[in-house]
Every structure is written in structure tokens, then in C-alpha cells.
Image 1 (cartoon, one colour):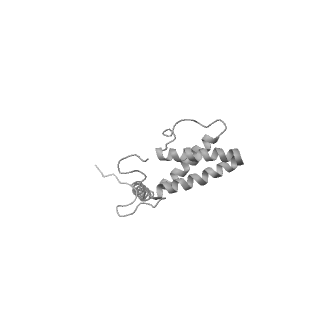
Image 2 (tube, rainbow, N blue to C red; image 1 turned 180 degrees about the vertical axis):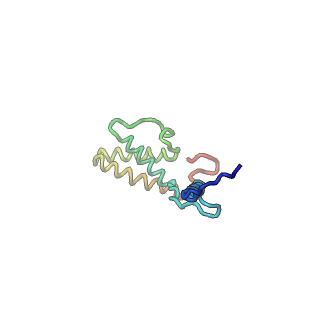
Image 3 (cartoon, rainbow, N blue to C red; image 1 turned 90 degrees about the vertical axis):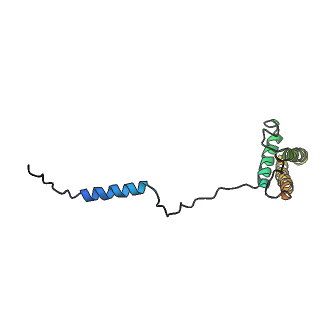
Length: 135
């Protein structure tokens, strides 16, 4: 039996090269390459988080309908943060009565920032005491 003669196809080398390139791309970066640099995850300081929480819930509770209700744990506050909220809200209600709602909202921002910064300034990096939950 005579060996079959194959006629070379001009597209065969091109198809082989494309298949090789596709398989290399599918495997991802090589062993020595570094991953692409992406954005770093953002962190929020305990002071900023406290301020955001107090401002949010004080404005909520200052609404004419009394806000969403709930207790400090439902608000995601520690006991100490709740004490700040209670004090700031009491001052804001007086400010609203004397100078209007815009003045009360500004007072909330100002007092929450000052009280939260004061609260966490002496605590270092961790908002929780060694024994457990933040106070």
C-alpha cells in the first residue's frame, strides 16, 4: 500500500501559533511576574467612624417624627458612643428650638467630631479595651 501523500496547508502554522498564544494567555501571568497593583482598601479611623455614626443617628432622631427608634445596639453603637449620642442630641434639640434645624445639624457635626476625637485620642489604635467590647 502506498503512503498517502499529504499536501501542506498554508494556514496550519498560523492556527498552531494562535492556539499556543490563546493557551498561554489563559494560564495567566508567569511564575515570576507580580500581580497588578490595585487600589488599597480604605480604612476608617475609630474617630471618623464614631463621628459618622453619631451624626447619622442624631440627625435621624432629630426628625419631626422622632426617627427610626431602636436602641443603641441596633444603631451599631457602643455604650460610650451612645452616651455621646444622647448628649449631642440633647444639645441639638435645644439648638433647633433656639436657632432652627440647620443650626442643629451644624451643632451635631461639630460636637460629634469633637466628642469622638476626644474619646478615641487617648485610646491609641484599638477602640476596644483589653478585656473585650468597646465602652
